[in-house]
Image 1: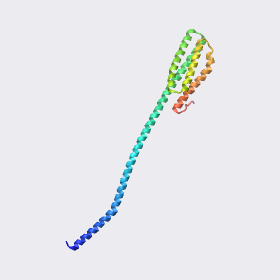
Image 2 (image 1 turned 180 degrees about the horizontal axis):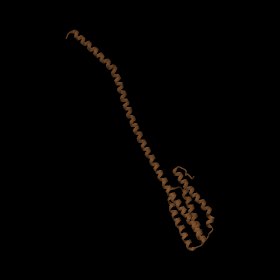
Image 3 (image 1 turned 90 degrees about the vertical axis):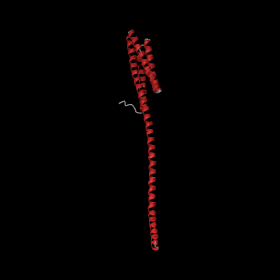
Image 4 (image 1 turned 30 degrees about the horizontal axis):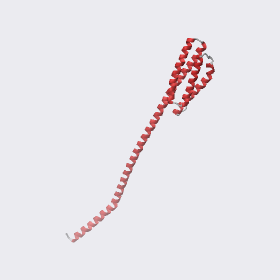
Length: 201
């Protein structure tokens, strides 16, 4: 190879290496910088995906806990409502039985008096069974109000059977007062458990 061609080749090689070096110096850092940004963005997205996944799981757990709590409260309220409605029905039956007993004793027919006494006894028994369930699921105020009503019926029935015929009319205000106390306690139970006041309109 001639020295001239050799010089041209060396110069061409130097120029080519300079061109390649310039290309790499300008392109490679920009490429590396862009590649770094993409890698960082990908890592950031991966972190966000993991965070969203964790938040979603936490949200589902909270929703499940809330749902379970709401369901438990709803079932408790339904149980209380059913028990209170049942004791309310038994109270009405008891009230009818003692009123009937008073009327029968006023008339004075002995056979009917025995039947009326048995009806009061049976109504009291059913009322006490319902009251037992109230004691399990309701407050002391409600059970006390029901107990006071039952005691009034028991003492009135006993007085009637002993011939004290005016006891019904004498105890009528007490019956009214104790019945209102029972109804108020029942309404309070239902309102306190449901969180909503009863609409009495």
